[in-house]
Image (cartoon, rainbow, N blue to C red):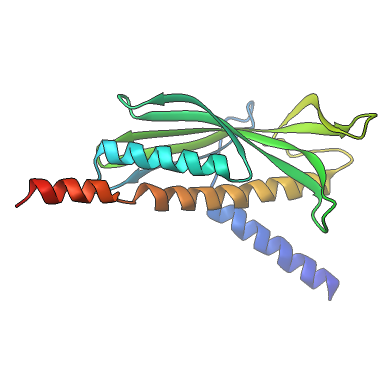
Length: 193
C-alpha cells in the first residue's frame, strides 16, 4: 500500500513537472529556463508595460525579494533578480532554512505581444553560525544539477517546489498582463463620442 502511494505521488510530481515544460539549455550549462512569447491582442505596448510593472511590484510583496535591475519603457524591457527561501522541514512553526533559490526574470513587451523569461536558477547554501543565526555560506549550486550527494531527497523536493512555484508565477503573470486599467478605458471613452 505504501509503495502504491509513493508511486502515485511520484507520478503526480512528474506530470506537474511535465506541464511546466521547462526548456533545458545546453548540457554544459545545465540551466533551466521557463520562457514563452504570448500574443495579447488589442493591448498596446504602454498598457503591457504598465501591467508588467504592476506584476513586478506585486512580486516584491510576495514571499520573495525582488531587485529590479533594468526598467526601460522605450524598449519595453523589465529585468531583475528574485530570491526566495526554501526550507528543510515544512511542518510546524519551526521551519529550518535550507537555502535560497535565486533566478533572473525578464519581461519584454511589444505592440500586442510580450515575452517572459525565468532563467539562471541557483541554490545558495545557508548554515547556522555560532550565534544561531542563519547565514549564507557563499556556495552556490545550479538548479539544473541532478545530483546532490547526501541530501538527494531534499534536493529533489526543492527542485519540484521551484517547478510548481514557476508554474504559478507564469499563470499569475498571464492574468496580470491581460488586465485593462480603468484609466485606459476612460481615455477611450473621452476620445470616442
